[in-house]
Image 1 (cartoon, one colour):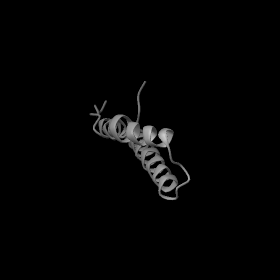
Image 2 (image 1 turned 120 degrees about the vertical axis):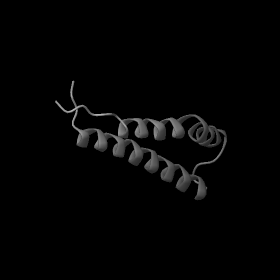
Image 3 (image 1 turned 30 degrees about the vertical axis):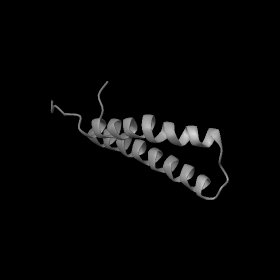
Image 4 (image 1 turned 90 degrees about the vertical axis):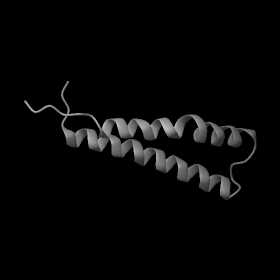
Length: 70
């Protein structure tokens, strides 16, 4: 399967946008006091320590894919 550079750039941007949106939404809910307790704390901890960085890394990897011109 071949992908165009623009498709991979779009995929990386989509990963970054999803990460940013989820970060904003979780922060807004927590800041407004609408989401509190053990579930919220566990999600925030998992998000910060286990999920967010790998998403950012994945976006970087997709951006850095080398292209061979045929």
